[in-house]
Structure formats: structure tokens, C-alpha cells
Length: 325
Image (cartoon, rainbow, N blue to C red; front, side, top):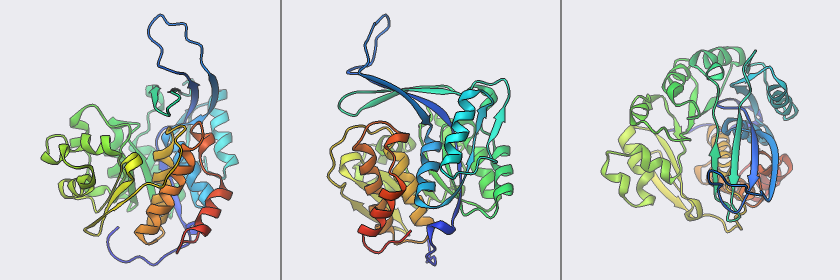
């Protein structure tokens, strides 16, 4: 992301979003259940989910051209997910539909203070691979950037290598963070253009480095220096975020907001930040837009259903300075 880029309207940009596309089962409960519990939930509902899906939807609502890169089953759940994406204007021709494989469900427990926990698994038959990414890139070209999550940790290195080989800029949200340090060590960091971890993920990436236990506001610098990633934005929850770009670092305070549910905040932030940076916006504008989108998301319950609407994003772009979608 270094160097000057001629600003472009987000509506001209084409993104691939690679990761998990699942059904979320959202459960509001005062605490996590223990084995043997008979716990009555305060609310339960199902909606389309997955980090990649949330990011794809946010990009599409911003007005970008978006193609989903992932795998679902041919079951009713998979059909519903593809239908939801299509309704958002997202291209699903780049999404694999695998017979005889159950589309995964992610169970999300949310406490009244907004904290959450996740239980999920993707069947091996629905694993996203580098071949899926390469095929999607060629089918959807020209592609301006691909957003990649770590929902398929064992495939992440190959997926990023494939994107780099296709000449596509990459935006990585390293979540969920792999438990195996070897997976992190295998990532081709030279193929990562923008990295957007939260504080815990940033410290996890830096295990073995002295900066892993340093001040939060220095984590973006530490990651950029350690891995050679040109643009790093570390989100710090209520403390805001720290952005390292073009060799310079800036910290941004978080806007005040009443937190209801943090489930999809990082997805909204990553998608909006990526869209504006890839469009060539001023970094400060990109961060402010991303923070505003995340603030909207955490102020209401759920994930997919909490994401900013097209109308909200357009109003946001018009109300914050020096930005146009």
C-alpha cells in the first residue's frame, strides 16, 4: 500500500472474499453453559454467518463489486446462504457447492456485556484451498484485492501464495488466530499487503518477539518491522486502533458507543478499511470510516443482522470529511 494511488470510486473496485460461509446460530445467554446444564437462553436465532460472509456483505453494501470464494453444501442451508449473498448483490458463481457435505453451523454465545464465544467446525470436504482462489481470480478478473481470513489455517499460506501469484493485493484479517505457531511461521508475509489483527491476534503473531508484551500502541510497528508488511492496523477495542502505513504510525481513539454485541465488529472494520485503502483514500479517512462502521455494528445485537446497511454507509460517507463512495 506504499506510494501514492489515484483515488477511485469504491463502486469501480472488485474484491474476492475468501473464507468461511456458514449459518450462525446466535444464542444470548447470561453465561456459557457447563456440561450437564439445562440453561434457558434469553434469545436464539439463525442467520447467514462466517467472517468472510460478513466482510463480503459489508463490501457489497459499500457499493463494491464482490465475489464470494468459499464452499458450501448443496443442502438447504447452503442454498439459503447462496440466496442471501445473491440478494446482497454478491457474485456466487465463484463459490463451490459440494454434494453430500453438510453446510457448517457456527454456534455463537453472547453474554449481556457483549462478550462472546464460538463453537464451529467446517467439514473437510468444504475446506477452502488455493485452487479455489486461483479459479475464482481468473473467473472474476480483473480483481483489485482479495480479503483473506484464517478460518482455514492450514490452507492460509497456500491461499496467500496463490493470490500473490495472480498479482492480487491481499488484505488479511488473521482470525481466528492459529493455535500452532508453525502455521504462522509458514505464512508468506511478503504476499500480505494489509494486515488487520486485533490486540490479542497481534500479540499472538509476535510470540517469540520481545514486542509481544510491549505497549499496545506499538504493536502495529512491531508487526510491520518483524514481518515486513507495509500496512498494519491493530484494533484495540475501546482504545481505538494503531495504523502503520508508509513507514509512519498513528493511533486513533475509538468513537464513543454503547457496546451491545462485538461479534462482527472486526469484520465490518476490516471490510470498510480495506475498501477505502484500496480505493486510494487518505489513511485517516479510511480509519474513521472503518471505526464508524464498527461502532454501528457493536451497538446492536447479532453479526450479519448488525452490519451497517447500505443507507447507513452512504450517510456515514457523506457525514465524515473528504470521503466519497
